[in-house]
Every structure is written in structure tokens, then in C-alpha cells.
Amino acid sequence: MNFVLYNALDKVRRYYNFTRLEARNLIITILVLGFIVGFNDGTTDSSFVYWITNMFNSILIVALAVLVHESTHRIIALIGGYRAEYRVWWYGLMFGLILTIVSRGKIWFLIPGGFIVDVLQRHRLGHFRYGINYWIVGMVAFMGALSNLLLAMSFKILMYIQYFQGNPLLEKVVLVNVIYAIMSLLPLPGLGGINLLYASRITYVSLYPALIAAGLLTLYAGVFIAVISFILVAALAWVIFYFTYEGDSYAE
Image 1 (cartoon, one colour):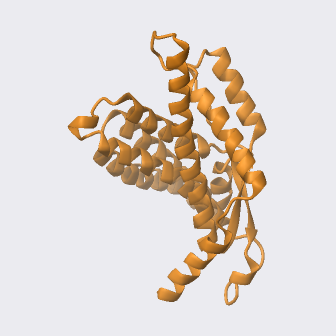
Image 2: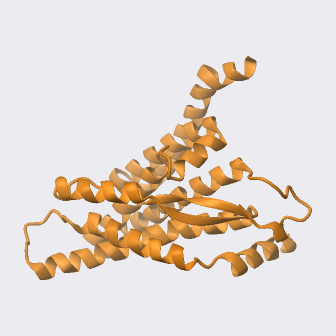
Image 3: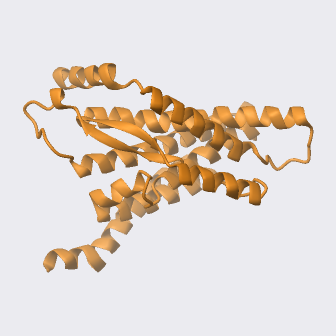
């Protein structure tokens, strides 16, 4: 157990750092998504100072969501013997930016990109050493989205404290992370969701509806019921998909 932990920590220590290209793309991603989130805060205050303050707060919130998401990708991939490298989806950023301007900030489209993986050769001795394990890659994608959902739940729990109740900044943190988690698993080329779908159809059909349900209930109900719904929806979706489609495909 200590060797496994040491090996994982050694991978993170050696290979966690983002490349210069990744850092540049992450900064661009954060600025664009921050602009999308902060373009319209829904208030009647049209002063420039207020708008700049709201934009600054939105960029910080988006930075937290993006860095948690991509750091989780990197760490989970390293534990599995791979290095996940962030790849920005320029079309997604442009579409989200245009949609924000056209809708005057009423519609958020937060799909910045996904990742590619490389095998860490020196750390694969004694294990499957060549090629890509698509199951691990799919789990890397899912854990990134799950990290945002857990972050949203953490801030939701913080809002149970009387001092933070009704705090609009914390509400935006929860909303941004829920939307980011859900949209990151859309089965579109360039996003992480396509990796989970390729890894296992039944896993995707089970976990994605569960993530959506838990995210929405985190926003509009509570964390406890969101966690319970995640488990129940995942189990129900697995059973329905298996007995209506997946089981028949195995029989053939």
C-alpha cells in the first residue's frame, strides 16, 4: 500500500506541471468562460465599476472550476499510468462566446475542450505497458466532471451556514460548477464525454444521467438528496439500458 501511494505521489511530483502551451490555453479558456459567465449578472445596475467587479469575480469562479477539473484529469491519469494533456476546443469557445453576445448573456455554453493522454513508459514496468486503456481514459473524463460536482456540493453545504445563506457569489460558484460538470460530459468530439462513451456505453448511460440529476438537485434541493439521487439514477439507468439493449447485444 505504501509503495502504491509513493508511486502515485512520485508521478504527480514529476509530471503534474502544465506545459507552456497548456498554461496559455488555460488562461485563454478562463478569460473567455469568465466573460461568458460575467457578461450579464441579471441586475439593473449598469455602472462600469459594478460590471468590472462582477466580471472579475466571474473569472475567479471560472478559474477555480477549470483548474479543479483539469487538475483532477491530470492526477487521475497519472495514477493510471498516463499523462492527460489539456486540449482547448476553439470551436466550442467561439460558439459559446457568440451565443452569449446574441443572447445578451442569458445562455451559457461552457464547453472549452477535453484532453489527450500519453503513456508514462517508465512507470509501467510490471503492468500493461503499451497502448491506451480506454476504460481508464473514460474514468479520467468522468472524474473531472465529478470533481466539479463535488466542488458545487461543498459550496452548497457552506451555504447552509446562516452567515452565507443567500450569498450571490457562492450561488454562482455552485451554478458554474454544475453547468461545467454537465457540459464537459456531452458526447461531442473535443470534449471529455466522448472518452467515457467510447470506454463503455453502459457506464456512460448510467453515470451521465446520474450526474445531471445530482447537479440539478444540488442547485434546487439539497446535497443529501442529490447524493441519493445520483446512486438511484445510476442504478436505474444501468438496469434499464442493460435489459433493453446491452444484454441483447451480448446475447448475439
